[in-house]
Image 1: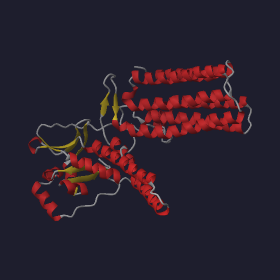
Image 2 (image 1 turned 120 degrees about the horizontal axis):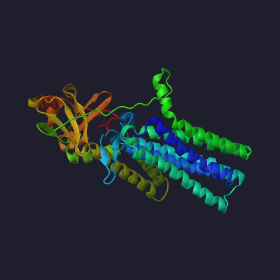
Image 3 (image 1 turned 180 degrees about the horizontal axis):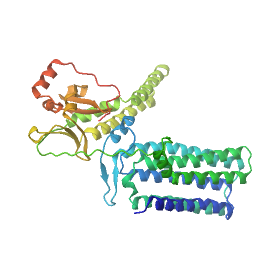
Image 4 (image 1 turned 120 degrees about the vertical axis):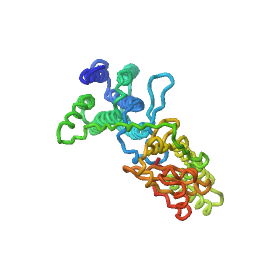
Length: 428
């Protein structure tokens, strides 16, 4: 196992080799500024993809608040704990890592396209420079070299076992920091060229900023250590929470499961009630009706678009609700073996959460439209800033909330159905 200093030196060696490729291209192969920027632009994309691969296999607990990803599908992924093992490799994918990876790829892709359009396209259009055949070959080899360099970095991360102790945000944050540094060099360098700055000055500036951004990324751990030792908060100190250990057994436990058909129908409602679905579908329908009223024909495209939007969000809602609850079962141990906790257990991914008896006693009961249709009920309780929802349970599961079945039956007879909290229909 390498020490932190040895890992840092190895990473510096890889980055120096990667940065040497465009430098050799400029000095020995007479690359133009467009060629240099093109190589750096491709390296940005390789850096983003490499960070996504690192985060995919990171086994540390995500540091973001799951409530921030309570959207359709994203919330279902972020609130699940558990891993999916790969059939051949000794690696596994942590489900809760996926929302942060998808968001980073979306944001990073926009930035990557912007850097390429301004930093590479803008310079090429301003200078009118094009790559010669020989230059194209050497640039292609340079692109291959930087991609291989990033692949070596990812392989060292996986083979060295570093993924076992880091949260997914760590490689993603490092990639975004590197993209910000190199991207700034591309944008500012492109701006210098457009403003008429001499190419040698722009080349030196881009090379210096790129190298500085990589060095900052390598020595980030030193900045984190300084941040932890001092009272000055620089924002580098890592937050590495750990997963709570949850033990659960089927032996001697009362097990309750949601009604599968109700879960699927609840997913349909979940998808169609999404604010984005309502906005898009409503807008297309409204424009279609207005077009029909002002023209001789029927706006089939707009009305058809509304149907497509409704169908797409229905499918997303069914996936969201099914992924959250279809494999869930809720276990309460019998009093004879000291059972006081309620455990939410996913039959595919393992234990998800547990609630004390006091928390169970505070559960609220509600009957949604889906519950009325299938004769079920929904339980929920807020604890530690999170809402725990147990949807579409059979009526004879009333004791799961910490009350005796007789008290629960009396409660259902005299109480009015409570209205679901707005915006919380996606919490698990």
